[in-house]
Amino acid sequence: MAIASRRIVVAVDESEESMYALSWCLKNIVAASATDAAEHGGDARKDTIVLLHARRPRTIYPPMDGTGYLFSADIVEGMERYGAQLSKSVMEKAKQLCAEFPDVVVETRVESGDPRDVICEAVESIKPDILVMGSHGYGPIKRAFLGSVSSHCAQHVKCPVLIVKMPKH
Image 1 (cartoon, rainbow, N blue to C red):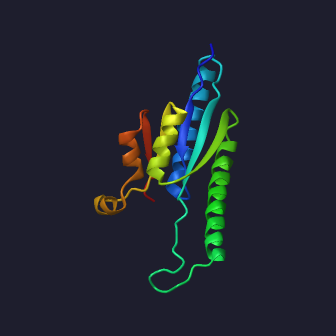
Image 2 (cartoon, helix red, strand yellow):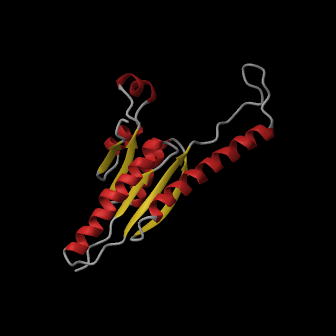
Image 3 (cartoon, rainbow, N blue to C red):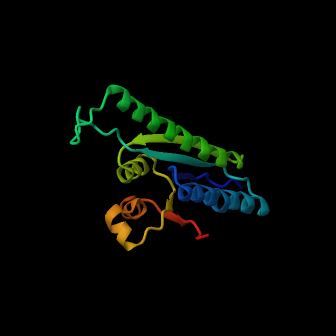
């Protein structure tokens, strides 16, 4: 008996917490279901992992900032290249983790914008079975100033959300 495959969106960024959440998802959701299917004589499902990276939008700089520093086109272009390289690096690292699991189909999406909005909008269009995110584990004071992307998404998306906390070392 074949088991229906699932679409799992995993929000990834350059943080250790994000990669830990992806790794945890692969080991505890994807691999566990494949093992369970094999033990019960069913066909293993081919889950789809959608790696979603929210790239901060390009900041619009005035030709001269408040300190009198002039932003040249080369500097702005260099910052754009850095952002693109960072996104590429994040996706490569995430795909390497997924490569250890041959029974998973990997899709990638890099969207530009505020991570809260990007993740919520992507989940609305992808309609996954679950959203998996890491948690930076900020305390209440830091969270009040910085906000929490995972809390925002947990409150606004229309699918189950799994927030994976990295164990303290």
